[in-house]
Length: 412
Image 1 (cartoon, rainbow, N blue to C red):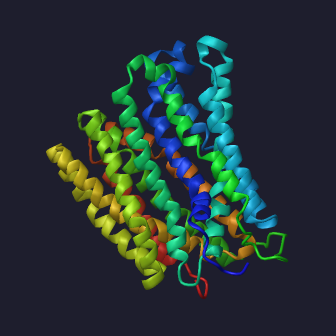
Image 2 (image 1 turned 90 degrees about the horizontal axis):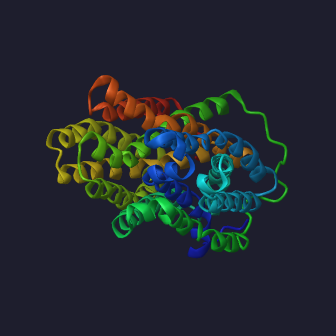
């Protein structure tokens, strides 16, 4: 494809899938109690909540499958058809879950349908990242790959900000009964409303997979396999750190005993910092190099994580929560974009879409899907509110080691 600048509407349509993923993730977490009472009322409050979180978790099981199937489709048939399929399935699953009748109306069919829609959504999300990231990298003008790929993480943070504002608004404007009956459905449908527009615009996208490209996936060399393994550990740290930032709502209310409105404020801070500094990280990686930018930002994040948590825990003050979250979210945003670009540039075009999809899906399924559960368990088992800081720091150390050991392709 001849390189040209894409209109803003087309760039927005490409990254809309990533935004919808994080919006749905947070909305599901915010309204887990209400969703549990809708689909699992017979289990009681605690049992219903656990079953709801398990229902959310099953979506991570099908992500690697989506990365393989839809990601590989992006390498064989083109980035555009793969992105159309993943986004369409994503919209269908979210709308389906939001419109599924309650247990009181259709009985056991309600939780079964909820699980099936979550499995479908996980499959679609697993297949979304590979083709869309490959498209952004291949459509970027010379010297702007980092900036273009930064739109992936930037829109994730915009979704976090939006979800925080929606959750805060609905919880303040609606009664408890209304939230349980239909408030959470409105929140989900608000996110799904972008799907028809995204599909229409994605249909007009140019194809970035070069004509005549090899349709049979090449066998990985030993060096490429090592690069992929390093990529999994690097993305694992990014995923764990991102989910720790999203965990600040639960950490603020459950561990620190702060009011929910203050904890929601931490989510807004996370989203705002990510939106502002994600593109900065991409631009800096274009200017100074991917590896240098990532190592510097991750080292600073490692140095800041434990002190930030110590201040937050010691003071238990809103200002400390917001300031500490802002510092960590800013440093994380500066590195997240660089990670995706490094992994993308180290994969050949013939396996880029599927490779990114599989690596990302494995990292988010194994490490992202378990991060909040593991941290909650560690806080209780160690009787220490600093457990999130140690867990996040350990992941960052492994990522730095993997980055140092990762050979870069010539010209990457």
